[in-house]
Length: 145
Ligand SMILES: CC(C)(COP(=O)(O)OP(=O)(O)OC[C@H]1O[C@@H](n2cnc3c(N)ncnc32)[C@H](O)[C@@H]1OP(=O)(O)O)[C@@H](O)C(=O)NCCC(=O)NCCS
Image: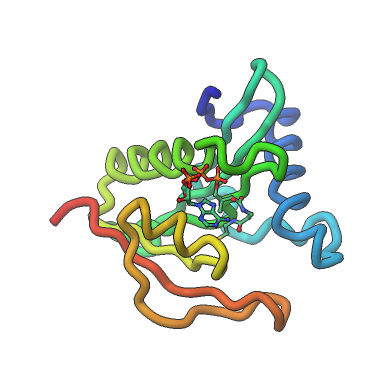
């Protein structure tokens, strides 16, 4: 497993394809719905295997100079529970720290709470309910105390 930043149009196409496949397609959301208006100002990381296959994706943007937010974390179904999510989360945290973040916030789907909690994120309260069906919990982790 190798963490890279997508750079070519082909890499970005595969990056968004996995985001859509895991986080939008199961709820019948159209292609394009996996992107928002912050893509250009965000940092994107993905894990590839065999130098080509994208197995995990995630995005980092800043809400303020010290607060980073992770969004759109997704690991391909067949690759889950093999450590890819943890590897990607650690890489995103390193990138956030390198860029000056003191803390990281995210909205976790309920089934992912344990995953984030294991990595040191604390629940802060209810978050958005996506598509009127997917409840989220707001979580935070301080990386500089
Ligand atoms: C949540 C997700 C990112 C985790 O990635 P992953 O590669 O499967 O996670 P890892 O293999 O690194 O798991 C690390 C630990 O987190 C916990 N964990 C991960 N997935 C879990 C799950 N579904 N249920 C309970 N615990 C889980 C476990 O403790 C696991 O360690 P273990 O396998 O030794 O028990 C991934 O399952 C995913 O993409 N899910 C679908 C999309 C999604 O919900 N994204 C998050 C949006 S907020």
